Amino acid sequence: MNHVPLFSIISVCYNCQDKVIKTIRSLKEQDFSDYEYLVVDGASTDQTLERVKAATADMERVVVISEKDSGIYDAMNKGVQAASGKYLFFLNMGDTFFDRHVLSSFAKAMGDEKDLYYGNVCRSDGKEIDQKGKASLKWAIYREYMISHQSLFAKRSLLLAEPFHTIYHVCADREWLIRVLKRGVSVEHLPVTVCNFETDGISSEYEMFEKESMAISCHYGGPLTRWWLIIKRCFRKR
Image (cartoon, one colour):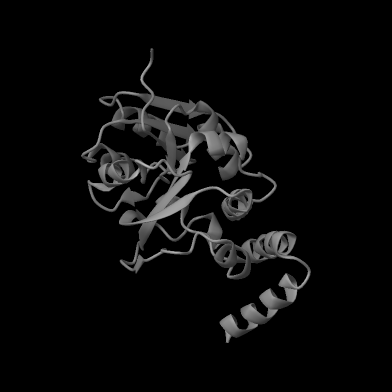
């Protein structure tokens, strides 16, 4: 019988050859080995794929997929389908684990087998973000806050049952979080800083973010949500 790893670490990427090495090195430095690594490449035209294969040549349990996709969330769904681990974690190319003990720290705390575990993150400018209590409908709908997916460990069975909706280009992860929270999943925050993450990802596309975020919050929050968000955004921009 094949062993099911505790974690599937998934990196989706496209034309990011200069980011590959530091991310994969960060994974290989972890003091916990019960994981598989999946790279979902969107048919890169630079040296991304070659560098991924070279960097993972000495690793066990590696899956590399390279084909065109319809965006990051389509690629993330492909990673879910190809994974076999009990819990899935998305580590973007360019991001790194905060220290070498992240996976072992989460593994020790997962005895009660919650659907979701999440921790804290550190931005590329060195600012650490405490996310305790923020995996909630209040924060996700009315504050338009998404806990960083680089801090989130989710059961593969949950992501298979509830995939990302690819009609959203920058906010599908927040729509997913709201959807599963409304379903009543179990969630636990761990006081562990998980990841150093870059701040130039797709969520930095602000106009598209505002449009999609408004649509998602109004869908789940009801008719008065639009006015609340308009007022909130006005105060935020002052």
